[in-house]
Each structure stands twice: as structure tokens, then as C-alpha cells.
Image (cartoon, rainbow, N blue to C red):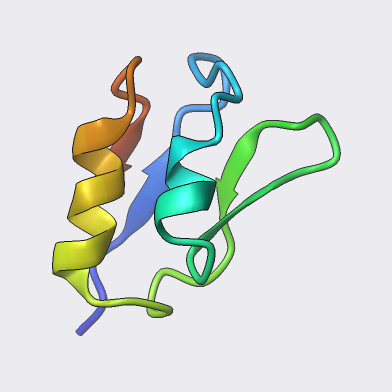
Length: 62
């Protein structure tokens, strides 16, 4: 079962760490902000690395 994963776009600073860490899950949208496009694209442990690396803590499991 895939947990809900989301990015607070009003907090995102477009640093790209999540996209670099797990490009199978995250990408930049048209506003150059991170978004989740495939929450099942990688193991939760790998996604958690991106969550932990985010400098503004805008990625959350819900």
C-alpha cells in the first residue's frame, strides 16, 4: 500500500534535492516547483531520503 506523499508548494524553494534523489517520484512542475508524480515509483526508504534532505521540510507523508 502506497502512503500519500505531497509537497507544500508554497514552501518549496526549488532546490532540486528531491528530484535528484528520487527522479522516479519527483519532478518539477511548470512553475519550477517540486511535485510528486509517481508516489509508487521507488521504495519508501529511498523516498524518505528525499524527505529528510529537503532543506525547508516541505515534503510530507499524509
